[in-house]
Amino acid sequence: MRRLFTASFVYLVAGLLSGLFYREFTKLNGFPAGESTQLGLAHTHLLTLGFLVLLVVLVLERMFGLSRSRLFGWFLWTYNAGVVLTAAMLVWHGSLTVLGEQAGPMIAGIAGLGHMLLTAGLVLLMTALGRAIGRERADAPEPAELAA
Image (tube, rainbow, N blue to C red; front, side, top):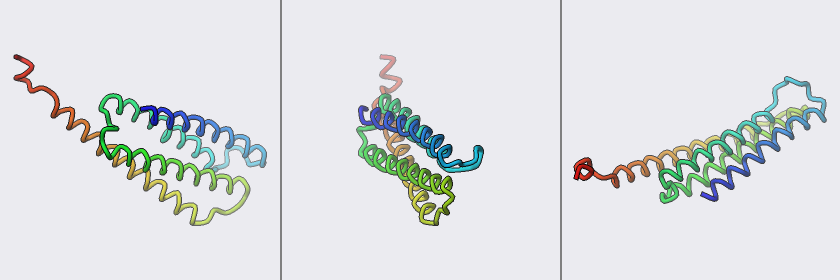
């Protein structure tokens, strides 16, 4: 549970700092307000996919003991790699946009890989959660045992 809390806290700080970077970097470079850049998306991705999702997983861990599953470790590494890779590509692409540079197809490809890792991580999480719920159901007393 400590790892989940720490990771969630790190994403909170990273999300807030990315929002600060977005605001100051665009201002410093005279980027027109209201123009589209992916820097703002990095802020929301880090806060939502990093901070909030891992807080929900922390509650699920507390309720169902997800970390007892071997899949949970795979989820944690895969999902975090996806969040970091996706956010890094958003910052890179957004920074290039603010500087007036063109982003090549490599950035889109790497961002796509980040999204694939996020998807794989979520599949691992749901599989681990399904198994934990099944394990809990199997351990629950039968209705006849409750009446006795």
